[in-house]
Each structure stands twice: as C-alpha cells, then as structure tokens.
Length: 156
Image 1 (cartoon, rainbow, N blue to C red):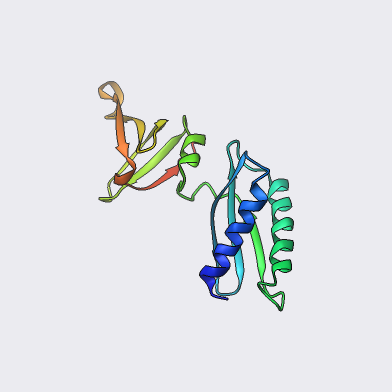
Image 2 (cartoon, rainbow, N blue to C red):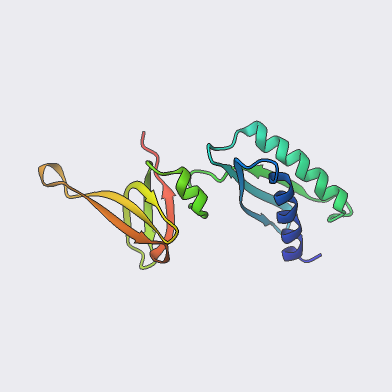
C-alpha cells in the first residue's frame, strides 16, 4: 500500500473518530519510512493527554482491523501540535485570538504582535513600533496569501 493511500485511509479513520467529538479537530498526519504514524489533533480549548491516549487506542485498533500493516509493524503517536509548530488551520487561528504570535511573511520578513481577529481571508495583528515614549501601537491586516507561517509566542 502506497504511503499516500495509507495516509488517506488513516485520515478517514480519524474523521470517523472525531465525528462524535465536535470540540476536537484533525490538524495533520504523516507516516515515516519506519511506519511510524504521527497524528496531530487539537481542540478548541486544547486537548488533554488522556484524550490523546483514548484516540490513540481507538485509531490503533482501527488500523490493525483494516490490515494496513499485516505484520503489525507500525507505531502510532497521537498528540497535539507542539507550541513550536506553525498554525495550519483557520480553527487554530481562532483558538489563539488574544495571544502573541510571530508571522513570517512570504518575502521572509517577520512581525510579532497580538492576534486580534481572524477572518476567512486575513488576520488582524496589533504590534508596537519603536521603543519607550516613541512606541506606537498599530493594527495591521495581513492576508493569508502573504503569510508563510504563524507561530504562537510564549512569554515567560
């Protein structure tokens, strides 16, 4: 079975698992050459480890029953995308409104600011230019077509 076909079958299984769980959503999946399957799920309010474990067990059983790996030679990891993973879906942007993000533009330039709004075609970012008394807070509308990556920034 080709990798893309396996991935499509796994994504369909995930869709079935998440059908009864509207608060959670599929972000991405990939299969490494060692048959290590990595599945990234998220939730509108995050996803707890016990939920990942439950989804992992259910998905593992579905993959086994489908006979995708007749020798049982595969491993499965279900987790949320790490904080260092760029946002991929509109739903991820929505759940991060109010947080600081770094936007890397398609031309390679970057801008860090607070994600204020998310629309179908763009985001609204509030950022500060300058330092001290000369600092000016501005709002910038950024079309998704101009965004290479958006990553949540954590402040300590």
